[in-house]
Image (tube, rainbow, N blue to C red; front, side, top):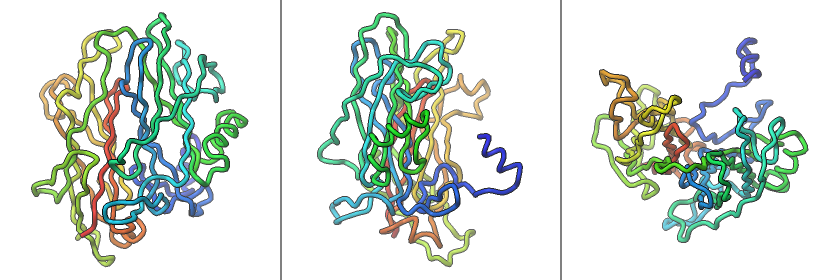
Amino acid sequence: MACGLILLGTGCGPEFPPFWLIEPDPRGPDGQVDPAGKLRVLGIQAEPPEVGPSAQVTLSALVVTHPRHGAVLSSPNGPRRSTQPLGLSTLWLACRQPAEVVSPEPCGLEQQNTTTELRRLDPMAPSEPMLFPGEPVRASLRTSSAADLPYTLLVTLIVADAAQPGGAEGCYAQAKASRGVSPSVHHCLIAIKAVRVSSSTTPNRNPGIVAVAFGRDGERLVTRPPDTEPFSYPRLSPSTSDSDRPKLTFSVERSADSVEVGQDSAGQPRNESLSATFYTTGGTLEAGRGSFLDLDCPGQPETCPQHPRTSILWQPPTTRAEREAPEDVIHFFVVVRDDRGGLVFSRSAAYGR
């Protein structure tokens, strides 16, 4: 953040891409294009996000790269580029967060806080058959039988691709030696997820996604369950002007029971607030975040019923279509979160026609 403020103050420095774009040509700190691409961790889900002692938790992380740099996987239509990073390797760690800690730090890489109960987690094999190219990476976690509830378990995920020497293990060793700093912001990422362990009779649950929809703005959208067959988008000529680029709607619909009744800081009942974050490998998103809140409600938004869906506008690429959409395919990702640690994600694709 400090570096960003310095760059803004001097009026110079690199132009950073929007967070919602999975870059086809990521650039390094000196502005040079990285020919090996760039890893992104878009979200980590704990299922369930809140458990009691001696309970099982399944962890799933959505780790992607642009298909220009991804693995080539088989499909019903033959080999296809995917968003699965080449040579992806993972290391999962878990530890207990001290009760007085305000800002959590990755397990085994602490600079100031000392976590306890450090352990490695067992990775889980991909499901068979693979429902979608590049499935999330997974691990399993069992909470201890400790009686001093509640407490927080921190899960640390270290992911690396083929460009990182030694993979995730090599990244972990180098990060430990440099006080928790990753040796490569493009090819070795360190992410954390908090899992609450409590005796609650109404523990938090993850929200759900029941459908995604896609189509021209103002027309009837094509609706499908998440992680299923692709949509289609209009392939544009490189000479298409920006004003002639059509605006398409991408929408996500939550499950009816996604909004739970939680508690505020004073222990009073309060509805969860849901939000959605969108990502794409090509084209232009009008915005990367969406809300389910009813901002036209006469009362306080957090006390009003939340909308069943949220939408954003997207425009297909023109001059950069060949790079952003190899094989005329563009990928979309959406992550829906509640404000108590619950999370769910989905993946979609659209073929140029």
